[in-house]
Amino acid sequence: MFSKLERKIAFRYLGAKRRGFGSVISWVSLIGIMLGVATLIVVMSVMGGFHDTLLGRIIGMNGHVVVYHQDGAISDFDFLIDKMKQNKIVSTHATAIVPIAEGQVMATAGGNNTGAMIRGIRMSDLQKKTNSGTRIYGKPLDGIRDGELVAGASLTRALRVTIGDNISLVSANAATPTPFGSMPRIMSYPVMSSFFMGMYEYDSGYIFMPLETAQKYLNIGNAVTHIDLFLENPEDTTAVQKSLLELLPDGFVVRDWRELNRGFVGALQVESNVMFLILMLIVIVAAFNIISSLVMLVKDKNKDIAVLRTFGVSRKSMMRIFILSGTSIGVIGTFFGTIFGVLIAIYIEPIRQFVQMLTGRDLFPAELYYLSELPSKLELSSVAGIAVLAIALSFLATLYPAWKAANTDPVEVLRNE
Image 1 (cartoon, rainbow, N blue to C red):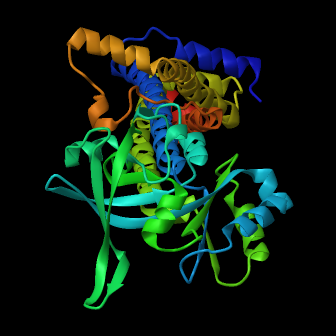
Image 2 (tube, helix red, strand yellow):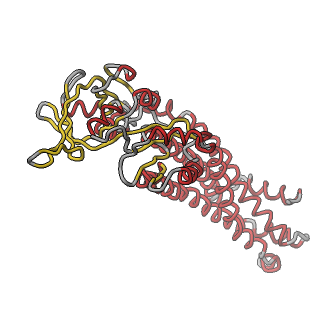
Image 3 (cartoon, rainbow, N blue to C red):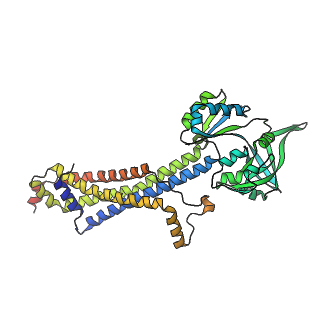
């Protein structure tokens, strides 16, 4: 695309040790693009890590696909689960199908009370669902029996109860009919285990119990409120939803994790997009600096351009010379910015710890963010996209100065010399 002469002149202009404001702007442009690309890669990687970690924790205890019935409880859930497992698409994507009995209650103990969500689940399923970061205190999950509870650590602190103490659960939905009207169902159960998951929503508001205990308490017989399906890839919900809607009888509602967490997922996406646009301004400012640098270069090399034109160098060749000169700034800045950004994204946690050691301040408090380390997820597609965008902006920034150089009138320039 570029001839040997064009490359030689372009790189001579690029590497010229000229003094003045134009040279400074060239360096500022290169450093600006380098910092912009590196910052974008690091921030997008950290936000990607946050996105996956938080969604993993939120979705971790909920199904990727959830099956409800519009009339409430699902009585023939074992038959439906067997039917789902026999479906080819569902069995291919689903790693677990878990029946759940759930309801809202008020938990009280020793004069303290708080709202909570009780969730009845088979303890074997709960043990599989708890991730490696979940800490269990007290009795192991496989030892929990009918009539025993597993409560969130923050909830037990709010109620000021310890392992073995009783919690009274009050539910208006599972009301008991009496001659004087319906009375809220009040039952007391011992807390035999507590858990710390790292998500405030669960640690402060969830109580797990064996499925049979929840069925008795909620007075729903041998039924469940919904069925959770856990998929190997959480993104494959569309095919599973479609298959379930065709498989299940009328009256069933099938939702995926995006619908159930629409507000949270939307907020993360908006935050990611806004941060990308804000940080992209660094690269755009650097691209404008390239324009300034090349305009000054054209002005500085006016006589050289006129002489080259008189020697037969075409306008297209002059344009390509300055396009190559300016784009090279963007390519070099993007190259080093990509390397720095990738290295920082990979070693973000050791860097954080080193900065904390130097400053003596906790830059990422675990009690505030509920994460023990700064997450980072480096995606090659994202890195490549940022690099291509930075180079494209650099190329666009060269078009006007290159056009100005190509349209220089050699007669006018040499007449004034």
